Image 1: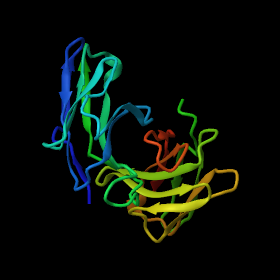
Image 2: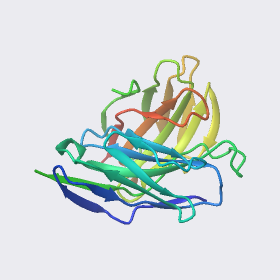
Image 3: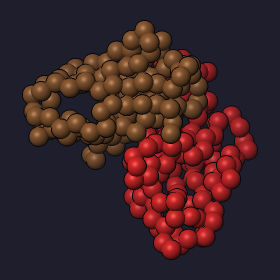
Length: 121
Length: 113
């Protein structure tokens, strides 16, 4: 079974600074997707960024970028120029791709425990 | 606003009772997923429906059941409720079975007293 580990329960950053959130995962699949979701106090789960495992290029969405290390099974999220609105719980998630070894039977997202990010003014 | 609507937003009920949580997916989305978020277990996948048919099951208790109706809305039924069932229940939807992006609703906060 796939597992996702976020080793940092809490992180803090100064406004306008850069912060990196860590995520590692364990899988025997070769093809899969990785995601970072943001959950602000409103509870809404918001997709921040996604990465396809077959793509070597790291995904970027404005101030958010990832460092995807497939061999190391590592998927960190970098937030540049942090803003007060970035304060939230961040979840790393994994999903098998249809071409994966499981034959596409695992449709679910597997989440890490989350990292609570505080942004200090 | 993700376009996924969950009702009610909050629910308080007593142990042993039965409740129904409702989810309306985004217009055009055929897949609905249910997740449970609790302090001790984190976010756990419960079940997925695609166009009315069950597609995948996760850590869903036998006391829980779900269905997706012809109009594509879904309901999660929780029965014989226990204190430990208190959690945030999310519904998410996507266009197909395998779309990489699932859109989440705002969740239903269930409190069992």
